[in-house]
Image (tube, rainbow, N blue to C red):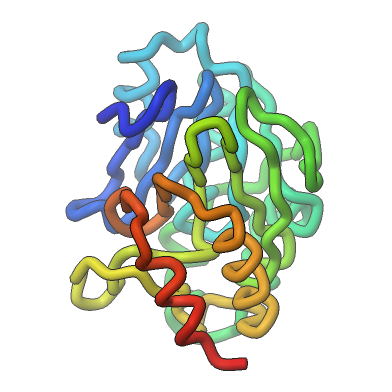
Length: 223
């Protein structure tokens, strides 16, 4: 675990930062796959279990909600996520994703059990010092967390900073195969790019200290 900005701790759950979770201001953001529970608890114990107020999801895909139920039960904390992903989390089914054999594999081996969502998050809500922004497209209820004072963006999967097949680092759109509405996600990319974030923390890939990479990606987007 590494502090990458003030009160922002990166928890790499897969090698080469292929799957990440974060602790921000006492909130656990995302929870990897079903087998990520031990790594998450180890990181949480470093900051102190009593300091974790709630568990929040950027979205309810299998590589983000896998250990959510286990962590919430272990720590006796509530689960929060974007309104559009509540049904997926509470059903335990990533039903909003495109149907293909990879997602069927993830559903069987990665997805965590259903768990009740205590609070649905909306544009402008606060999570610690971060503001919730609605960024649908990759999933219907995808959200990000933005801290204007120092330009930190917890981006989830609205963007990625690694190729999931080759593990090569590089800023990119999320894979279309896992994205429910590609055009809508591009609108969300443009939305976060207007913020001119200085530090971008991804669900997949290493943290990026943004200079002009995001502007270059937006300029190259279709449409």
